[in-house]
Length: 219
Image (cartoon, rainbow, N blue to C red):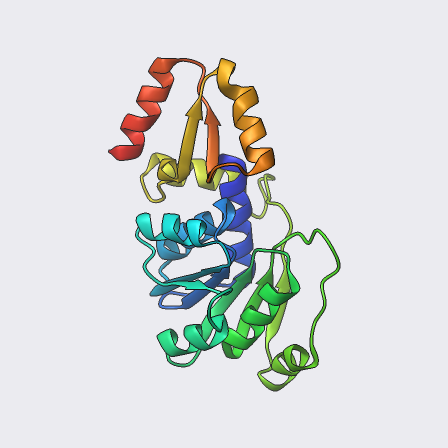
């Protein structure tokens, strides 16, 4: 869990998030949910999650993220503007899709910040309207890649471990499957084929470790 949580941490550091910010995260996968947790830990007043998968959004709500938007069924940017009043202060594009980027550009407020984190699997296109959003709202766009583990300026892996140990960020509830060694092949096939909903799949060496991880996660 440390590596993806460090990636999420690194992305939010690029955004320059401030206390009281309203944050939109487009993409409610594992790192998107970690971004949401970090944003609240950082002092965000509201975190909104947008996705096209209702199962992901339902899982996000089960974790306490009540502001979710199904971008396949409704105008996500309009919904964000309605909920926030003036638009998000920060938007993080986490899906690597042109439509997701457009949502971020339209939903963020004037002089807002947009962080590009999603890794596209194919070409991404930007409409003229999306480009105008950048110009006319004078947005700041920033890319993010991976995470930092050097001592300077910050060892983000160490920051994650310290935050988890202190209880400032809780990540075990993001684990949907705990599997022993003899169940790994089935789990990998499930992930490959997307035959069942999953968020994070964790290998646990023994039944005792599985029970312990559940106990900690529900504490």
